[in-house]
Length: 400
Image (cartoon, rainbow, N blue to C red):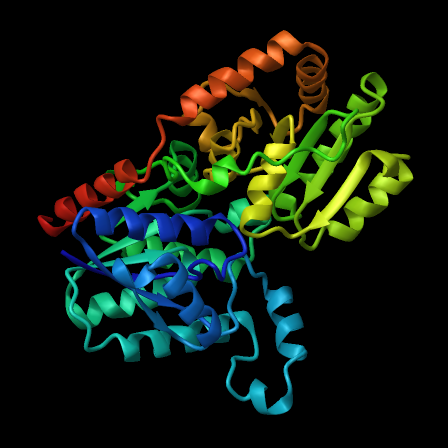
């Protein structure tokens, strides 16, 4: 079977979990004997050649480039910021706003894939939906829309109506929709009035083993416990709730360290909150981390906290447990459906969040048992199961 995929990013050019998920899916599909042509918005030639040589991506996915400045999770305002900083000559190559750029990407993506052979079209999130719709119209092949996050998730329930309309059109045009959790499935049905019969849930997996899981990174804070935040610093990820929790935890564990890894539009606000609440000595800001630095951050931490307001899945939590670090999860997440050995709280309940973290940090027996159970549970996650489930979806939709 041959799959034509449209996506926003492909490692190492990535800014979040979506790129990793796409890479892992392609790798899993390759192991099942499936060929993938993956169309990305932009893949600089220097990165592409280095990446293919380093990770062997050309063995399981043919990467086709469309020149674009689109990035995952980009808002209209963020797009304008990037566009305004381009030189005059370069601006002529791009759309003047985010939706115009999506249209340009769609036209270019379709043009370069007109001669590709494929059995199924698989698109990842709203920026690629229109490209998939046109490919479906031109080819007559079935369209599978993968929803990793809705506009309602990304904006904390205050969607850009143009973008949410694009999602509505794309999801309703698809022959089948793959959601990454029951949580996402329910949100899609509620917000986009999609026929539940064409929705399938495929929870994400993660590589069973990797040298990066065994870096044995040690914390530089020898006399302090470490609680980690790692993610985009946006309203969706709940960074302000993390600060609220930190203020409460400090009262009971004065020397605790909060390592804050990531960047995003809320970063200045978070720094201000930390300063205003006299938490500066307890916080360490690392900025955005890539590659092995991510694994080192997990391995140095005693606990990873994910206080997301709305987390469709939460692949980062699986990365944490694969590195041997227990997790505290928002109940408003997909990963909470598949992880048993984890603290689970409502994102807004910072008192309960703080109580669990203080108990974990102050009771060695609890932290030891949770860590041991976390490591054991992590062995059950892999890349093969999600890929097989996607193949089942392809086989099913071809019969419709």
